[in-house]
Image (cartoon, rainbow, N blue to C red; front, top):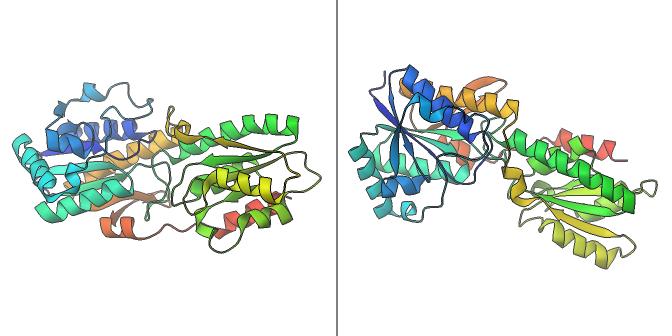
Amino acid sequence: MSTVKCVGILTSGGDAPGMNAAIRAVTRAAIYNGLQVKGIYRGYKGLVTGEIQEFKSQNVSNIIQLGGTILKTARCKEFMTVEGRQIAHETMVKEGIDALIVIGGDGSLTGARIFAQEYDVPCIGIPGTIDNDLYGTDTTIGYDTALNTILDAVDKIRDTATSHERLFFVEVMGRDAGFLALNGAIASGAEAAIIPEFSTEVDQLEEFIKSGYRKSKNSSIVIVAESEITGGAMHYAERVKNEYPQYDVRVTILGHLQRGGSPTANDRILASRLGAASIDAIQEGQRNVMVGIENDEIVYVPFTKAIKNDKPINKELVNVLRTLSI
């Protein structure tokens, strides 16, 4: 059994809808199990500056429906240095924090892994990122909400695209992963998705023009992942203007719109389950693992696997999109 008496919780990296639901779940599950909880503000920065507050059950009342994170999030250059992490550890000792729960994405869990190695601190990660790109979990907190936001936006764009008989490139988030673009395209009935996973294999624009953009359609929508690998929506719009000038092209970049908003039921449930599971993991003496969900079951994934392994795109979904876009 674990000897942890006080857990610290922080949110780091890009915010994601459902982070507050996870904060609530961690706090209440910890208190239920007789543990003290301390909220660390502004991610790892709060560990360095000592911006920490004890959390009671009432601190997390009425937040499950809120987007963003009540703990705030920030980049912390100091924590990337050995000296910064030493200050962070001294803060933890001073505050009596025995274990750390980190809600965030790839970079956040990387920070937790390094910190845990250097100071033998039990760290548990909770996958909170709209990109859904962490290996070892079927989905991440915020992904479902972001997908529904994309769906709502593309439905609206479709109305104007059809009215004006235009080709729209809609850029969505997903720096290194095409999950939002691909599933957003299927859900919205878009004609194609341009994603980083296949950018090196084929000329996705040429493939789309040849097969997806039928003359029988009076409008088309292509969803593009914002990745440097794809070049983003503006890159493809310029290419169409130069290579296929007969098409009337427009670009919409959804940007940070995708990160905001009240989390969906799915994200609230997922965040609640993973938050409670993080306390179970600590009680069981687990350390340096991410709690994830696979086939509707809670799993523990070592940080090294969650961070280093690339999460594969389901190629069957690519075929579904191609088949249905005729």
